[in-house]
Image: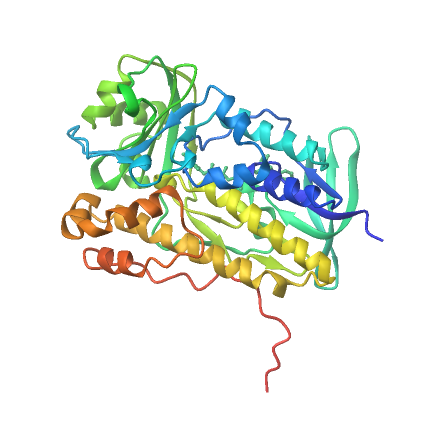
Length: 420
Ligand SMILES: Cc1cc2nc3c(=O)[nH]c(=O)nc-3n(C[C@H](O)[C@H](O)[C@H](O)COP(=O)(O)OP(=O)(O)OC[C@H]3O[C@@H](n4cnc5c(N)ncnc54)[C@H](O)[C@@H]3O)c2cc1C
């Protein structure tokens, strides 16, 4: 008899989604979270398709009732400040999901963790998982370290790694594989009182270009806060200093729109920096364990796909775990379908990210050449990624820029192959 059906490591969007959905099914779930919520987290701009996981989790009303800035579109701005026609989600989708949100992640993540708690998951905050327990090849539990309790063991039929970019299982097993090209760094901070666009565009996510295909994000949030960040090559950003504040201030001068919007605001708080930008684990699962969200894969956030992929992978993993526990087989093979579908969705987005970083490519060029594909492109940008065939769109993009080969890794390992 196991103590739990599932141990979920990490209480971010991926972990609390799995935790809530399994608890709702009556499974005994414990979520172990190393920090004390609410805690700061980057990743404020949500794709419209997040809505459907929120709906399944039963938290749409809570989100709608919050003061979160409403996001109706994504817009792209050239270095000299020219804005492309915004991609308005409602022009494409007649559904409440067309209005997305710019969220304060500390608040959203707390709301989601509380939701998992309300559905019956046990949540232990300030509890860090430091190791995995194996029986043979199979993960059967974890070694946790509580603030008060010290180290102790917990066992369960299934373990879920939802540790975000810490990617605990990936790093223990040396499974992390960086994307061959997408390895930028990001520097970001926050402003109060920065300029907002009028009307519908007030809550738009803006992607504003810098030289060498670097870019700024501008995410207007509630309480008059703007999240602003730069993503670019290390050599470009560190060309004359490594001081994040100095780099940030220098780059503001390099985009007219950003300068215009930020100059009337006041910067506050830290300048955060992150490297190791895009990666995927060798496998999405092993016997007794499955990887979700950033603990499995991270993709350059130019299209704000991270939270969506965290939610969707959490949802898909919960369904696969439920089926695995039901059949009494928690081997990695139970997660083949999960890995296949998730990798497919990530590859679609990865193609768009590669195209974005090619100087020869622009969405304007694509749409001028293939006006009929505007809707299909918007489908990708809103996050309709799982189980969708974007062949004609990718073919059209591939006619303008070279698309990457799909990454060969990320699927569940195939065991018990008899080799002659
Ligand atoms: C610069 C940048 C900008 C981004 N912008 C966006 C954006 O605009 N929109 C978007 O959708 N996404 C964005 N993302 C991506 C987004 O932040 C992530 O994809 C998302 O947070 C992933 O959710 P998660 O639940 O997998 O991981 P996380 O949200 O990171 O949650 C993981 C949790 O696990 C806990 N944890 C870690 N290790 C342990 C351990 N050993 N034991 C117990 N607990 C542990 C952590 O404390 C954390 O709470 C951005 C990312 C970066 C780096």
